[in-house]
Image (cartoon, rainbow, N blue to C red):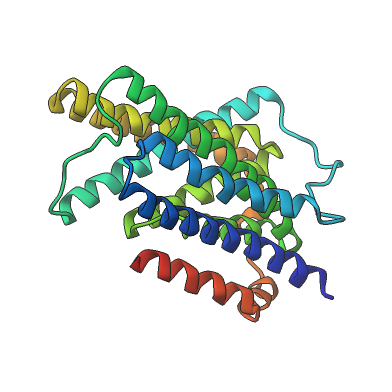
Length: 284
């Protein structure tokens, strides 16, 4: 069997399994919740853990799973920190711009806190909606799926891992933001050869979003809006300031996309099963 096809199928199957497990657990919780109230932090944790961990474990059992070559030199910790700062700034700027666009197009512009407005509720949500997804999603998509796809080139692996990552999210705005954030995180993974910077950027992005919602529900809308605009504008400024650094250290391979890997992907029935599953999830 062609190695590229085998690895691509494995990557898509892992993403599809993550999507289906998440949907199955959410469906079960929906029916259970009609009888007993399930706190949001428990509901989110119960969905995230099996949906991310089971595909990781299945991929881990494969023999000869490709990883980044040991001969590829990892960036120094100092340069990795600069990538973390750059990645967080770009994600913050993107989140800010997408949120503004959503507020213009959506009738419901208000922020919401998913779990009360007290400090305990915030910390529980930080764990379930911030820390847990940041760790488990990065282990699956940038730690396991992206290396599988490197057989088709770095550009292919970054792009397709971002596509698969995007479609496990609900809502068009969340999908588009997750795709762009996935490109950033995949780029960081490819450049630093490390997973920890991706986890840190993902965690910081989630924490910032939760803080804005917490401020909105616990303190005041004005303070929440001020924090939202300050962080967003700061993200844009820092992103622009870090651009020379990114261009200096970026690998040109990340921007090269050859046809063969995409043709292999489009010929795979598994890919269309994944797309169909994602569409069904959006409808439900």
